[in-house]
Length: 450
Image 1 (cartoon, helix red, strand yellow):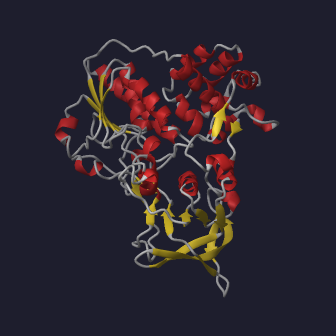
Image 2 (cartoon, one colour):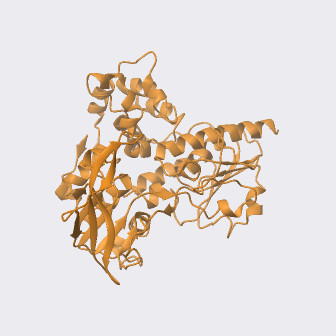
Image 3 (tube, helix red, strand yellow):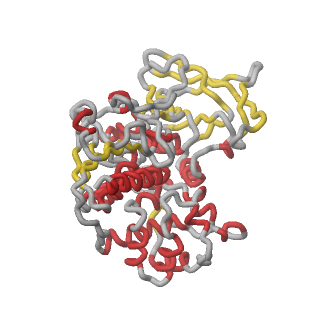
């Protein structure tokens, strides 16, 4: 897939990858072997008929390919861009054992982009059942649950606390990786099935819990909005951000265009990003686009980074400097950030995931300091605790997540949950998969109650 040059993309927030042409999409689709037992489908959390849509591309029937995908996934342009296909559908492709696997994600994106440019075809919706479903949160889990309930003929109301729909797709993932017009376009397709979207509605505050529980079924998909911090000295200094706040200010509230928009952000000239996942890469690459020299501090080796290889490569191309085998111990300065002190780390025996366990070095050269004026902590986040704590009888786990069974049922019979609020922070497609399973159980429950 073609990509814009690093020099060009550092000047804006436009998309990095430019997608496949029709010719290249067909050629890539022709590589598919059409396995009688396709492992790729098992590797997809939402069980898309991958051989079916790829065969349609190979036959140059792009409209049919779009229909096939949307039987199981109403957000193909999103998933084609941000899903970790290399660890899921693509990672199980049999061609990958001796050659390169079929680029399933790129083909999914191609189909979605083609349909957007050539006219969208809405899927069928069942006759109205008269049942009312409330969906809390308009991120990938909420939108997926809403879609499945709408298809079953239920009346769906989506409550969103922010002023734009999309959840993490809107506030968390930068536009150069997930263009916001595409997010809104795919959400509008779901709303076109008949859902009502209520923005700026905080369930438990502006929407009373009693009003929520009066619906025939409730799905909670409020995500993982509680950032974690390291708990080191200096985290209260001006210039220290959680990745959640930093990305929200830029992605949703346009702090990169202050004072045109009234949300400011400290534009550091030297920024330290702590972490090694996709959120850390997003934060580092946003900071580069704001003009900073960026250090990404990670306590393990570069080959242990949990972020997608594609995003690591993009960050390196864009000039992010990786400081691996290091762990921050103190943020220096006061009241503003003036530096960060780190300890070098040795790699010891591997943990259950196969990654080495880092151990702090000792000795004269075991510590060093980086001269920075902004620190962004991207070390993970937990379930949003606001709503879950307001619903009487709703059981939660030790980390604040909502307890659910394998079908997304909570301790309250007609209340279900899915996505990061139930599982902890995970990927977009895993949130969608858990929401789809929960919605199936909701639809079954509502059908039995007729």
